[in-house]
Length: 313
Ligand SMILES: NC(=O)C1=CN([C@@H]2O[C@H](COP(=O)(O)OP(=O)(O)OC[C@H]3O[C@@H](n4cnc5c(N)ncnc54)[C@H](OP(=O)(O)O)[C@@H]3O)[C@@H](O)[C@H]2O)C=CC1
Ligand SMILES: CC(=O)N[C@@H](CCC(=O)OP(=O)(O)O)C(=O)O
Image (cartoon, rainbow, N blue to C red; front, top):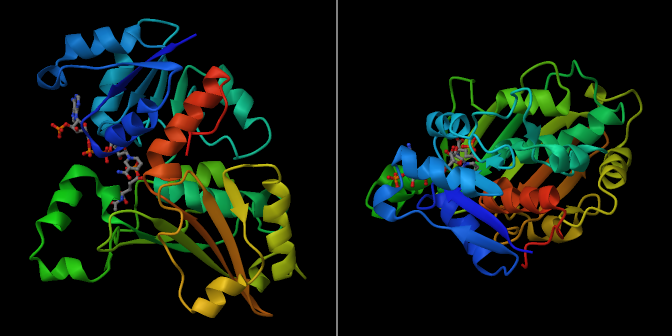
């Protein structure tokens, strides 16, 4: 059996990558929109409603518009934008989030794909909240180092034009402390306070690592770095796309520097715990266009349709 799939926003960064994943598959038929009609509402509505699964790889406003165009009750939407990630009635497309999340994705006709920074942050902290090591009232901070493809076509063009000296060094942003991923970071970790979150974009195409620094005194009394690592390993036991690295990963420590790009071209998330007697760093690394966007969207489709979750990588 072949499923009909439509990518609304097929010419964009996330849409193109989804199409690359789908091109290798014989179990899906991709419905294409003519390039000159890709913003034609009637043609988009026709294809959205002809699809078993439609990916929305659009700015937030266009995603909301697309969602309102659906009249076919069988069409499942997987929205890569920020528009629906904490909206009731939309399942959060992160199968590894917690027990039961796959069932929600299977049952839903509306799936919100997590944001790239948010996926890494949530996967690093949700197990610690669930295990009672980190209280829901905890005040945490996080940084994220990301490649420039996270900013879509406009940012890619800016970096690839070259010549602007400012773009050569890493650039912290979201300095208004209101990054658009904060609501989903809170909603899906269970943390009641927004983290102090500072993303940093660098002069490389893709790859992302979120770091959460914690004093052990912020965790349940007596918690050790070993227990933090164990909580992550227990939460993700059997998850094919999540790798919990050994405590104080020797290879990284020997290298002396953290490689933000080592999950590129995979759908994997690597979780690290580095620690001293009093402090830890929890780091989650992913490809912002893999598990941070397009890979995650295709994985969610596979879960929804009851197919193997592998992406043929
Ligand atoms: N890049 C990333 O790493 C990630 C992106 N996302 C999210 O995914 C969504 C898409 O992002 P991304 O692919 O990076 O963005 P891009 O800017 O690369 O692509 C967006 C595409 O949408 C098209 N578009 C805009 N408005 C409309 C409309 N009304 N109807 C049809 N098509 C339209 C654009 O057309 P045109 O070609 O004319 O500009 C463009 O091709 C965004 O919401 C983004 O926040 C999520 C996770 C990661
Ligand atoms: C470098 C860069 O600008 N990154 C984007 C995040 C891209 C992403 O994954 O998130 P959305 O799906 O929510 O757009 C940002 O920080 O806003």
